[in-house]
Length: 137
Image (cartoon, rainbow, N blue to C red; front, side, top):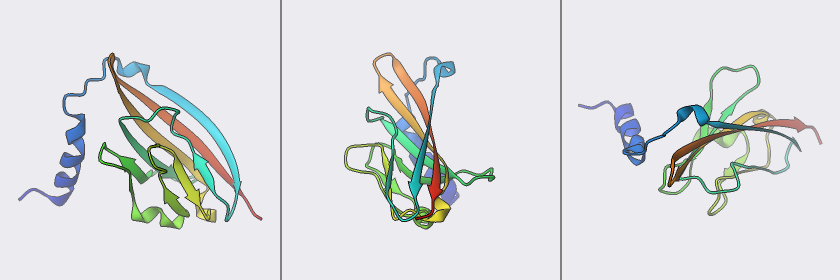
């Protein structure tokens, strides 16, 4: 019997089969900073072009672990239920942006969008790091 986690991760890896990253050293890193108010809404960008695959992660200040909050492996965006403690999340139609409404105090931290673009020259990977700081009303 194949363990449940293998079924999940093996299935998620299927879209990557045959995808070759020609120069993995040319990964691009883009950093930004956003300040918002608790209870308000914020949109975090993941590039200006829709990636083939993207994964949004969140890390609390001072923590080492990264929590997945949203992803799209080519079958439409999916949100992770554990992200509800941060606010109401959604990925607007036909984008890779992360919209968080009703920001909770726990939403402060680092958001990372890992974007993979399948181009004629091969795959291109970009990491978008957005630091979200929250202010009280």
